[in-house]
Image (cartoon, rainbow, N blue to C red; front, side):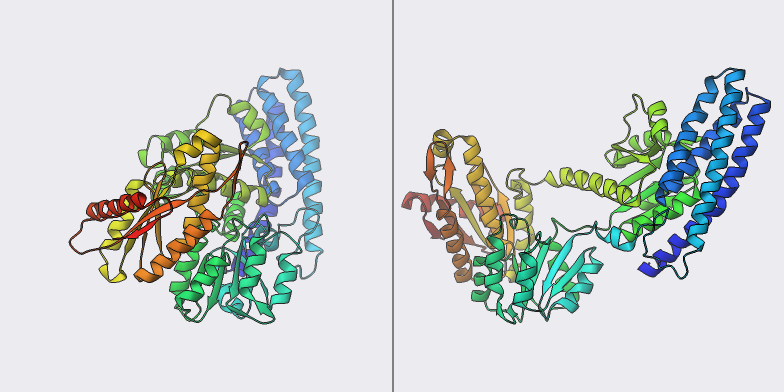
Length: 548
């Protein structure tokens, strides 16, 4: 669905909201008169609360603050009817009738304001209940800064991946932009820039204290290996061939920017109010999610299995069912027992129904703005994904676990044409560093080694942590000379790093054992052969490199 399609859907939902809300106000008046005649009519009281609940939730999505607040207050007051005597109930009904009349006049005023805006843009933001603009939803997306002639082609690619992009045409413009505000989430530059050096700009960016987590990529004609090494030295994470197929570039972008990429997560929304359902579908799709919205709870099991959601958003009040009922059903299915669940409710429903019930992961209080809705969902999914992502990875360095590294090596071994090479490396004297400077300093040494490994080999292979002080890399499509050049670069960068502790400053070193794949070796034999080379290197002394 395009942005214009989404805008039309949102506008249609707004018109539907006005029409249905007027109908609900008339039904609220009828229910109040019915309760006034029979103050023991519990069914009418519950229906009344449900109507106020829906008015509060749907108006919140359209940022009609005054209307939402008054609907929430009316909902809260209506709940008290269930426990009141005849006289008190009649007084409450009279008060609710006055509040309902006020809601009617507010709604008509909002509708008149909307209708009085000729040729209103679907992206406009006006006071008094308009939808948030596409721009405000885009603000939740990550930003990639494109520099040079690569911008037009890559802008579309990154838009498809869920990013927004900004651009500069030359060195001076890029430098002024990058150093006048917070750094973007990613930086991509032509290898050859007008007015200056892309490598120099990369080095300047890397000197900024907040640049550590910003991926930097150079783009140009298929570069020589020496150009790629120069890019690594300048602090770049990758070098892309601009003439590569779009699918190749998309795969590279997904890999390099995976830690900041906003995937198209699937959201299952269960909301029996069609007005809120339509609005939430449009807002979530605008923000890059893949929503599936259900208004019929009886089809929940079918929808759950069909959508395989990354997160489930449940309204608490769903007619004959509640969000808690559906959450219990979800938690009984092993496949979805850890899927994040967010309950959507008003504050007074939370106070009256949530006590002691912890079936979900979060609660979103109506009236919730679209920005809060989107950011809450994104944050909960990212936390869930982060926890899942720790499985198979070392928590300190982010490197693959031993088992996952073996799997990565096995995948490379199946394709002998890529000439896979392995290195096992050991941080010299880590136990002494822990004893002399503390374990926290030792962890800093380990994490630094992990970061330098990722910087050096990100483009060429997979990195694993095999034990406390040992890492390994399996790389592809490199000659022995090229591989050894990167190893030397890594060695120099690590040995030039100064570590600090309460006992003073110090440097550390790494010893390397390198072995190429031989056809007769299994993966285990390959790793063992590389280990033997490492032991040989250690006998030569700390900081040695031995190639088998």
